[in-house]
Length: 172
Image 1 (tube, rainbow, N blue to C red):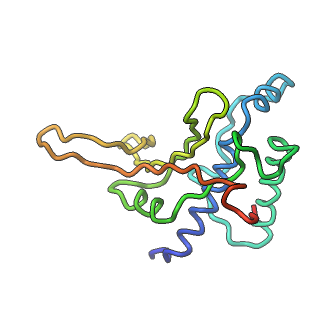
Image 2 (cartoon, helix red, strand yellow):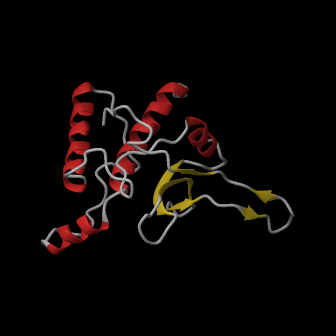
């Protein structure tokens, strides 16, 4: 059964929102947490590959996760800052183009900076992921065929469209 495009877009954007907030943390905050004895040992994901939530109570608890993140990383500005944004927007067509690529099973989201020092000019990079025969995940990339001159292209998304620049308010 195919998921209707609207529901798929909502699920993808909700997942992206959560991942974006996780990936745009301040380096000094992370360093402070580790210095204060926080464990940095990975225990693995709670939701391997992610999960979609439709229950209202569950969605409300997810809102609590984003509130917790904002309190830790943006204590003086719940919307984030210019160098450390809380939320990004990326157009659904870009997400659709990435997800419709051959062998694409999901997305990886990378934080990036244009500059190596402040002002950093943060960006969000979104790339399709494929599963290798051994079960491991691999970023999709442009590759040249070994027996032909045909080049297989992939779409990589980039955005710097972020709050507070583009939003009147956010639910998460």
